[in-house]
Length: 382
Image (cartoon, rainbow, N blue to C red; front, side, top):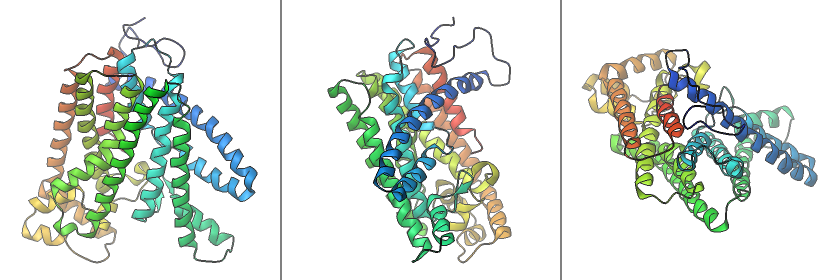
């Protein structure tokens, strides 16, 4: 068995021999992540079956509503947050501890994520998510098809808000099932609550920026990235995992914080690029959405900062933008040099994250996984 290989039947063993392919770290990571995701999905499926059944007993319509929420929790997604939390935990405890006692906590992060996504889609008036209609759009379509009274769009938004609310309640319930001593679980909960507050803070700054993009800035766009994405995608899940392990080493917390902030910001900067240049068949969202709405991302703020007067006039133009106009503006952004600058910023953050891991002793397999995750989080197409 290879050094630092996991025991038990949850995760695969790191092979003694190199894995075929151009990226052996990512190949190893894929094998591990697949099993973590499967375990989290099993936990969610079993928990939600019980919760949906309980609501169905109240009224059949409640059962349908809860089933819709369940489907958005289980329907796709890369399970990024539970994965970072797992490796944060594993980095502390090593390969001999069974993961089953903390699986409810890991799965909790996916319920939190669904809450955030469903509400975010309402706020952004997004039509698609993960290649299918968003919750409020799907519910509105059913309302219209059934010939019900009232405005279908308004009904869809109201139900989507309730779906998000239900997911955050479910998250609290599931977290409470984590098999840890009460004082330790209370400490875990403190970090979890901070993650939720920072997520809401980042979301507020995000929608605030859309109301006054001309007076926004690159620094504020990066602050949004730090709180809306870095905090609850990488940094807080990683620290959440460390808390589940009872970590109290200041050096470890400092290293995880530096790694998590850097990878999380790089993750959002990658999202900024995908929001303009991503393939809709892969991202699950229309191409050029950020250009269409004028969303003040770091990419577009940099483009305006670096633009010539003529380029800036094009980027600041008002009114509806059709597909040819969006394509032309995407070329303008490239011509300003903003894309190159964002790519350099991503690289700098990944370099800083990997340097942070070198400052502290963590489980060897976890270190390999975190190195691979840093790469996979920023060299992706969705």
